[in-house]
Image (cartoon, rainbow, N blue to C red; front, side, top):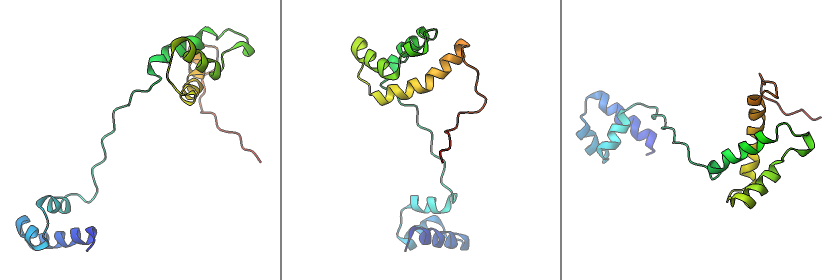
Length: 132
């Protein structure tokens, strides 16, 4: 007998008037199983997990400082995510992955430009171009 069939049988027997103890004995199950079967059909939503700390958290202020310092620099002289990554490893001894730095810089660079007033505020998020 599947779990769904068992729960349906428990609900039917309970509607007839059987007590929890009688349901336990008849179906050879524990009282918790009877409770689950007689409870709501949909499970409770899961609690959201607290945010986990990132390995990049101690270095986010350093990266933001680098990005803010070079806002006025010509386009070709601005730091790339690769340069920022190597700078973190060399100067600060960071133990972070390149992908983590690249993802943070990609999301943070436009935000810093907007905060500094050098870039327009985007109303709609950028969409990838359609290639044919």
